[in-house]
Image (tube, rainbow, N blue to C red; front, side):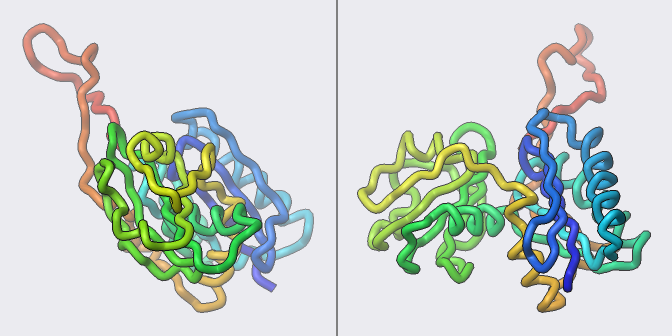
Length: 244
């Protein structure tokens, strides 16, 4: 039996799930934006309290490593690393794009097995982090940042059914038009969606180095300056805002 704590902080939703043999036994989440640092520790404590009541031992911690919010990813990975060091257990790093892909698989009740899933993570303006996967999680399009236009994903127009998922779906619908394209709206990555992936990684001993593992950003961090933080003499205060 495997007991894995799953942590997802790549988006505006902060969530934690405790899974036993891949099945969720405890789940808690919040969509309070910018509260990950305050909430995540509390949620992990609640999950560990639930584990203690069951008199079970934690076998591993899984965390989403991106792409996604720079700040959210750092918060989630830092806490996951601390737990693994403290308890001397393995760390599992999961792609947020693959987490969304698995979420789409479970949402497709009429699947015929030949679908292609395209996760879309909003990266401001018309840019997204994306990839395309077959249902066995083999990449048809490798993970990458992409600026969406009417020619995006042209190579997928010959597939029978292409399913888009994630918080970048709304902007994709504005420019993509193909009969085989289907859009799943209001779908965000959650720790609840990580159970199958983290269980597979645990069984395959596919672990992340807790000392040197870093988030999967896909592009370099850029900071923007809030307009009201520029003072008259042209200097700037140290209050850079994150760019996703």
